[in-house]
Image (cartoon, rainbow, N blue to C red):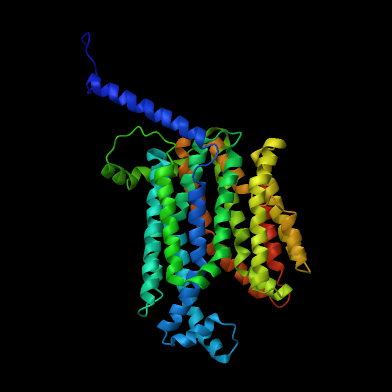
Length: 472
């Protein structure tokens, strides 16, 4: 090379400009890392979970009413389904309407659980290359689009008869762009980027607590919002909250990944759909790694699946409390609120005590959590009175801390470039498992309802026991 000549294709002025821009990005990243020690995507996740929780019960009830109207019953007769009447007319209407509404709800569950898997995995691999924030915004856009369609359908149903099957189609944007799987995976991947081993588990516990708090608040307020307004306004409120969460992500967060690529938007979109992303996903899970890392990763995936299967009894738990303890909906709601609130306390208070005061390892935290699930299942299974259910959740405050601990273990043994791919895989599995666990526990409960309706609790405890053995 001749003296004084540079190999760069840029002029010296352009190189100076690029150097200044890179330095500025590094400073921004350092500043954001310092700020992210306290708060990052938690407010957005709380809003997302609140919006989804508010609309979930309302949508299920709305689908029943729309099915009733679509089947030819008049509006007055359909309103009997929302009353406390035990008349023969209501029974006849429910006999015809509920099977159809159940099929519609099942299709929505399948769309929300199965369809997002491929999109979530591709976006997870893509976010490791192009950033957490863009992946979160893409998935958030799909959620916003679906809730906008739900709102339109709800307003339209006030004017004309709308088939309940249209509500299944409204969830397609949600599912195709990854849904909450991508949003949650991007948030946890972000925390892995900006935290260290000393505070990572605590921060992940706070993030899980924010999501549970949003879901809990939405669950408690849904009936009041519906009573004050109507179904359409309820969906509109959810849509507005999702839009607010997106604005928070856009304007009040910064990415944890400093992009080294100058690819155009079109190139990034094509890269999202390329075979290379699929190869990256497969290599993350099947590539041989030193120190049994691959085996540990698959063990954590299996453990996550087992805990999700064991937790699949929630769908019949209300029926169990009605039959065994004669609880009404209000009593069950109070119990659910107390249970989730204690789990939140376990994440917000229990994890810091275990990690920072007692200096427990993440493996120990996960073991204590799974052991707590076993104790919880056994106490509820042997319970002879309703107060014993409160005893069960009071002595098992740590039963919701395994998620943060396991994700911290993953972030410790995996390189940063594989983080989102693994999180999306684990969360996609979490979303699909209820398709198996719910029918399983429904069958067990239906088969034992006359002789021993509490048996499903012991089955759940046994599955958690398998998870404990796997951890050991």
